[in-house]
Image (cartoon, rainbow, N blue to C red; front, side):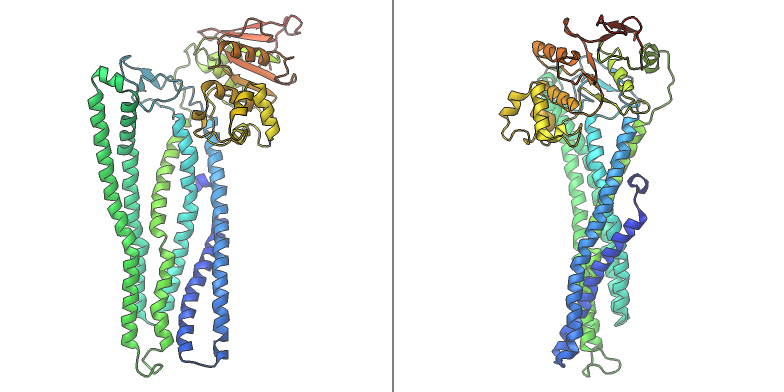
Length: 568
């Protein structure tokens, strides 16, 4: 975890120091306030209290200031570490070939099999199942969860675990030592109470979090999958005679999940009760010890002064402020460890296994040996049947299998649309895109009327991401994102899929025509398509057949590459 987050020990130390300063001020404030209250009861000269009064004010101010600085320091470390972790995961996934192994990792099962709710992706058949022992690549939903919430859970470790635990350990020792100067038995009782709150309660919370995690990961996930299957495929299940079976399986999984969550909730309740019980025991014990030691002569030898008695009773109340967050810290640690396991599994899935069979005609190496480099042409169409290797070729030209090309960008046909504004979705390609540039790009790809119909225009949020638009609108949005990209070479995978035939053909003509004005003439456009329009103006058409053979066809008669094709 420390390695993935690339945590800086010095930054962690600074955050802990500010945390100790904040809670240390609170502890000193409690002791000094108790002394001041008891001393004022004796009605001494006002000047005898002036230093204490000023110190109380200073500690009150320093407590808030140190807490603010501690929050700044911890969140700075957390956000830095989350950025590093997310970048590491991005690079690991981008540098792998898990998408190419999707087909080999699964096999088609009985064609009568009913589709399940957790279908691998939009492009996989719904009647597929994992092959035993296969290295199954993660689904898009898994990637979004792991890159999003799982890394957020890891980042929360800094704020909710590392710093609070270190601060609690230091302040607990300080409180016990301070109380020991007044009464050793009271200090021993406080130490035991702090141990219950800081060790036993977090352990119970961790057990509860682990049980809840297992319930969600296993039974709750099974319930969700079966329930969605029943809702989406009730008719097919009834015809197959499996509706009742699937419904019962969902109901059983739901009952198991509820039982596990109830058991976890009981441990959480005991953990929550441990802190107030410990506070009550320590304060009551300190009070009884103080009453026993307090003598009628106040400060006589062997007796206890009023100021000491007040500190003895009030100090434990402030001491528990440091260990109070530890049960929540234990839960956060359990959650983050589960997230780390999932991210480690993702890294294992993205790690390229040794290739054992290189004789397959559609193998990546075989395809790339036939056509290794990007052709020297401004407008290129890549045509071929599904599974021939068209997308693989574009990914290779983008450098996704080796060293990424800085001047080329691959735009996948199933690229993600985020649940944010239209403008922010277009800024994925270039962060400084203005509203005017975004509107221009949307109009160029044929989304002008759609943009006018949005309630807030370009700042309108796409609630649910891709679910907020149709398939054709999604393709046009992704194409607008590509047009706004700073890349010199645009590698577009099926940009006109799901569009009406005539509208798709018109858009494809503009993409493949260097004089259309849709894309700047000095930029290279490579388009994967099943069927280009017959009157297109592409400089080069690459025909890839089912065996992976590539046949170039230069369409422009005045192209100097017509007689001597070259590649880069």
